[in-house]
Each structure stands twice: as structure tokens, then as C-alpha cells.
Length: 137
View 1 (cartoon, rainbow, N blue to C red):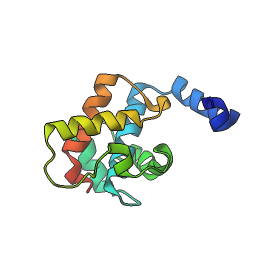
View 2: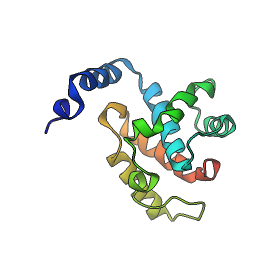
View 3: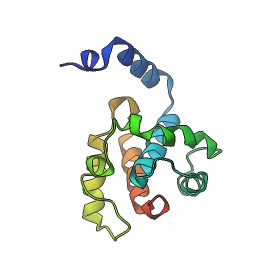
View 4: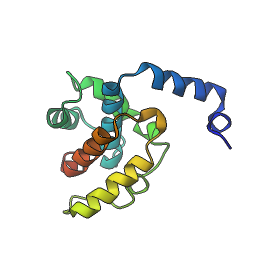
């Protein structure tokens, strides 16, 4: 089944519009804020958490911009759990470099095409979220 028939014509048009009109900086903010929110396992991620994440990753001029992607993270990641997104349980325990590399690869496999931007930057961003996961856990 192709992507048009799975999402329907409206979903396809909205996705195409998002891909066409959004700069990579917007996609980066949406990707990172929604990923952090999903990894937190909480229904709502706090403003203070977003502020810390933003200070580390320089995603936006204000944390309030990150709030919407964090709130709709479940929709962005199509209802997947953090284990489904990362391929492993993400806890506060130490993760080896190999575990982080595997989790990043899994994250990228589960990222929708509409949210993609420069591959090297996405790898770096996913890695940074994982390395700083104690902020969101």
C-alpha cells in the first residue's frame, strides 16, 4: 500500500505542505522536542525541561516554541513507545557508545520522511537527546 492510500489524500497533502514549507530549523525543533517528550514517558513535558534542552541544543529563541511539538509528540511518533522508537529501554543508567549508536539508528528508522533534515544533524541531535536524557526522565 503506498503512502497516499495509507494516509488518505488530506494527510498526504498536509504532509507534503509541511515538508515543502518548513525550514530545517523548524523540523529540527519539532524532531528534538517531540523525541525528548516521548523519551520522558510523561504525558506532558515541563517548561523547565524544555528550557534546559534548548540551552544545550540551541533549538529556538524561546522555549515556548518547543511546547507544541512536545505536546503532540504522540501524534508525531504515531503512538509508538520510547522502546519502539529507540529499540531499547531508555533509562538513567549508563549507555555504552554502541548502545547509543544503535538507539540513534533505530530512532532515524522510525522518523517520518516529512520530519527529515540533514542526516548528520539528525544523528547529532538524536545522540544529544540520548546523552542528556536525564533532563527528561
